[in-house]
Picture 1 (cartoon, rainbow, N blue to C red):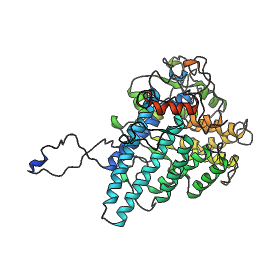
Picture 2: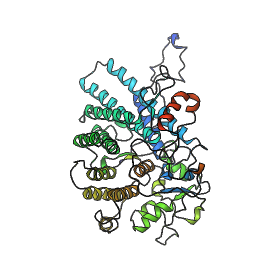
Picture 3: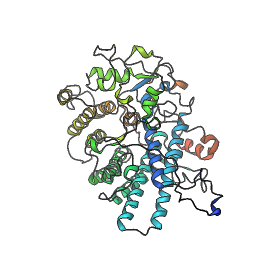
Picture 4: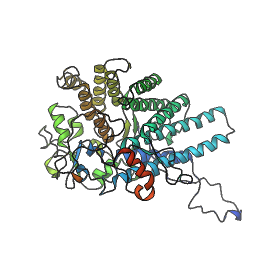
Length: 488
């Protein structure tokens, strides 16, 4: 991951030099009406990464739902209160209003450029690459929305003029369409040509890496659908692998943050700059790593007591005293620490799962599992000798670790997805491991870990008919209702 200066630009107009043309006097030069597609793309990418990275309970409670972290004096979110802070509304608005809308506007401007383009063939290829990358990230964002809520607006979304009250599309149908979009986008990318350059905060315009990301996302979505339609999932997974997956940590999708306050990592703003001490590692998570003597403990947490070599997590879902437990490591409190949306380790866990599901991806479940765990340990700076020792432990080695393949992969991916709350929560929902349980006291007497977000309250005001149709199809709007791919 190499540092790149992050420049967040909401809207910057392109103006010509001054003239004496009085016909321009009615133009408001302080509130421009035009912008560049690159600026919109950068803005959307930044908001997208902020949303998945943030730990503010107003926006992102996924680390809490994965029981990797817990709260200190205000445990409402770990007790599954989504409505007190209208968390679903903020999650929904961030993706639709701040991310997808900007991607759509950027795409519109690029299509206009393409339609009127008179330059070289190479320049046209760059425009096509930019369009393909927008399709890839748009698909990623819609996938997050489906995996959070279930059925969501898709075909009529972002079209306020023609569809001010968009219908909710079937979640599985959206997934299938996203796989088609991702496949087409991956195939359209000219990997020998440029795209956004420095305006791309994740890959710096590297189209070969964007293709691997698109294919890896296809692969993940296919595996997630396996319990619903094995034949379809297998075909899609094999096609994605054939096109080329992420094959090293260097290919992972990371976004470095910057030293200026506007563009610091949200974790730094939440955990350091705010002056608040709202979170500690959860005992659920810490206890598991203690049982395995996991070498990532020192990378994930501080020692408690200091200098003891011991680690202690706060009791999940209860009031905790900050000074009585291990704390979040200084590593991820760095203002420039990268955000992440896909890693090589995740790809290898998915390949291990594919083998166990009977999908002929090559290799063995054990070899992919070992590669996944190794990649995670390396990403966190664990020494080579400690990696070997860890993989040979009887409670870690694939052949001897406790339980079914779902438990082995589920528990180790949960550990590897530390600081990636959404993926950790989603992996738990699919594989049912680790065996997380709800705390004794919960909001609305919820008796299990949530399986989805309830729909945003604002939809009850703005789009009630379509909301009610979606709720009726789902059966209810409860957080414990499983999504279409969560069959077991």
